[in-house]
Length: 66
Image 1: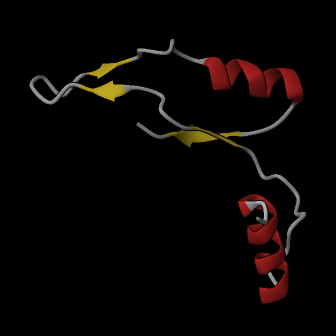
Image 2: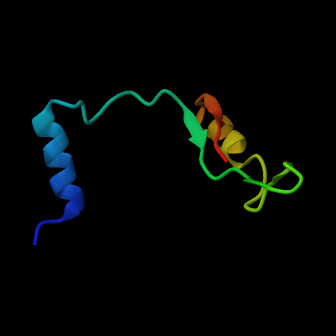
Image 3: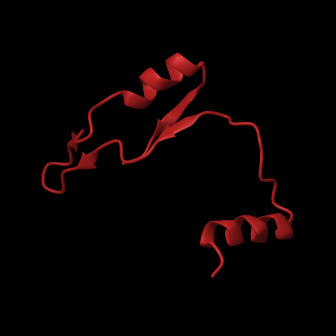
């Protein structure tokens, strides 16, 4: 059985998609949980981790996604 990841990479390569590109910055995924009752963000994994990381590796912070 073929590795799914290996197959996906080969497929992208076959389609002509660039596989190795310059990294433009960091987007923090699952930054917070938005309470459905109050609409306030709750940082269940901590707050500001991506911002601290981009400072250490000299990259740009592009935003966060809830």
